[in-house]
Amino acid sequence: MKNIINLITSSNWNSILEGYNVKDVVNLLPFKELIILAYKMLYNGDWDEEVQNYAVKLLYAVREKYQEEWNSSWNFDAFLGNACNITLKYDERYTAYKKASEKVYPIPPSLMVLLAKCYISPGTPPVSQEEAESLLREALKQERTIEGVSLLKRICERKKDMEQAEYWDKVLKEVEEKNLHIHDIQPSFLKDL
Image 1 (cartoon, one colour):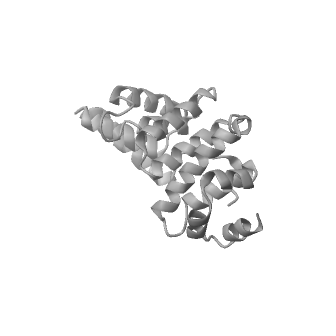
Image 2 (spheres, helix red, strand yellow):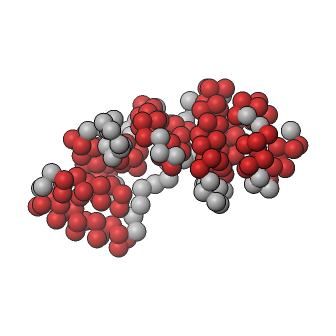
Image 3 (cartoon, rainbow, N blue to C red):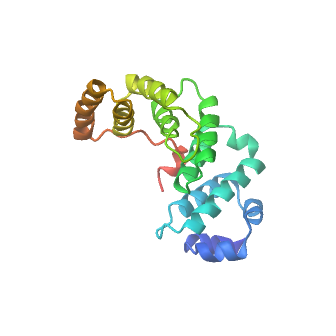
């Protein structure tokens, strides 16, 4: 136990990958510490993909072992969605965001934007362009953000609706001027890291 704590403290991710399988780590640490570890591994300074993929596997193992804690907040599924987005696991990203959206009412605008963004993926997207547009319009009624407005503008351009594209381009300039981004949807205790 002390050894893994030292490795985490020193951000020695490769030693963790080489010396500990995911299930061992999940059995050694409490829920919150595991989420923090996954966060640190996901956003590691070298942006090492192997470490990021380990973080995603860790989150799945945490969800399995600590079901009650995991299901206590939609933010854990949203965080998993973000992790899957970083590691280019597009279908898993959608599934996680969808689970998060089923645990919260009303769905926060930031989560609607992330769900809408799932229409951009290889193969057959899990969200149609029409569904994405509907989600974005609903989100933007509540909160105009750079991410939401720029995505809706792009959809209007793809539909060749230049009048709407021009309108959203003007709105985009306004929100960019104010630097309005979607809100962080990860668990609140990760904001202090």
